[in-house]
Length: 79
Image (tube, rainbow, N blue to C red; front, side, top):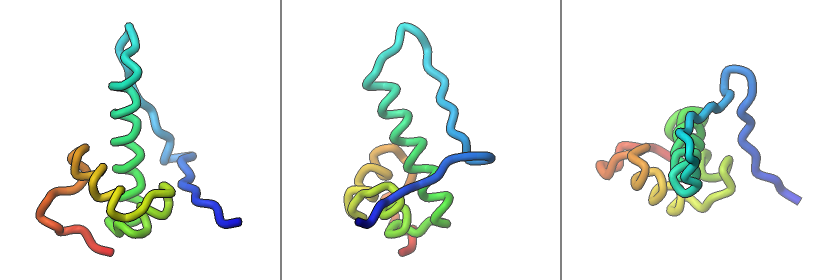
């Protein structure tokens, strides 16, 4: 069985600050954006590799990354 994993440890530790009272939808959106940013950094902008690391299909990664402002609509990413 193939597994997809993206390891965040050591220097890649993810910390998210939230204000109380907690708004779960906002926290989840922020966390998703952070994961997308990290995956794109670790894959050096390679969308296919970032998508694989997150267990997403490439077009889903692109859609989510654009929505979160992680990538632009200009199509400057590479695969």
